[in-house]
Image 1 (cartoon, rainbow, N blue to C red):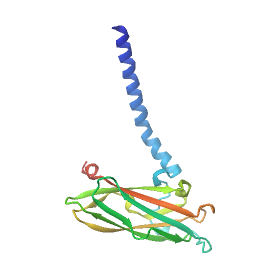
Image 2 (cartoon, rainbow, N blue to C red):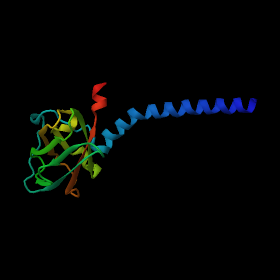
Image 3 (cartoon, helix red, strand yellow):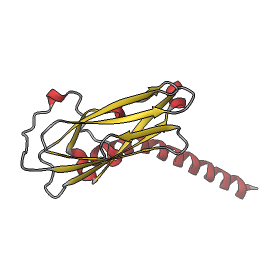
Image 4 (cartoon, rainbow, N blue to C red):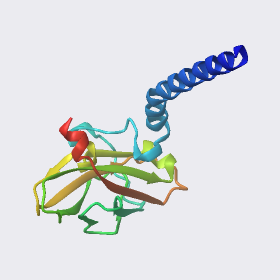
Length: 177
């Protein structure tokens, strides 16, 4: 009987320790994403275009690809009007995305970005993006959503293509809380 009590106690302590460790990882994961650009996150979000003061590099072109998806079972259409563009570092660019809530009910979507190569995350500055906030859509609503960005001319020369991927997830239950 004593052996079982000791085992149960140790399992309880281990469970509490694992929960605490998992809870502590949340802020560390945010920091890691901001530093490395993991999941398209970085501290390089700029809120106004006039805060960007880069010298245009007219001799260099970088291809930026746009990949879009919706989470499995989410009744939305989501696409970029252009699958890729070539941009000069230092120039402000705008790309328009289209989204449609095909369901018969109001929904809230959240776009989660990802970027490849991850080293480019620190050099791509978004000034406007639907991925910054949750997007409430009425039933059947269609919307154009611009994304504005500039690439820092300090982007390493070996990076000539950047892929931006956005996946929309249903955040209706989260937004209701």
